Image (tube, rainbow, N blue to C red; front, side, top):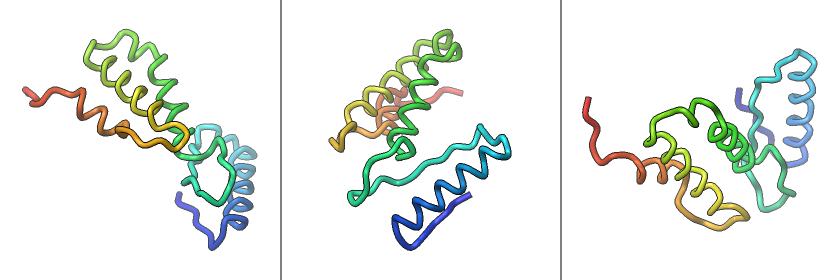
Length: 108
């Protein structure tokens, strides 16, 4: 579901009400993400913070710990790229890190 509003205050209110409604219905698996803005304080729901939490969870998962070396390396590359963009610094995106650490060709 994509929610949109005219201004930041309206979107703040809409976001809070949506999170409350989801919590009331036990929708704990819902992912709430918000695009960051220069005009408002950073939050835990900003896209970078949400993706960093999911990436950390993935990297600590049994799936990755016991997975193939290449998979572990790609997840690690994504984490490095994510860490290099913290605080507004620009670096290689996690998607580019995945491409950079992937084999140049795929053999079926």
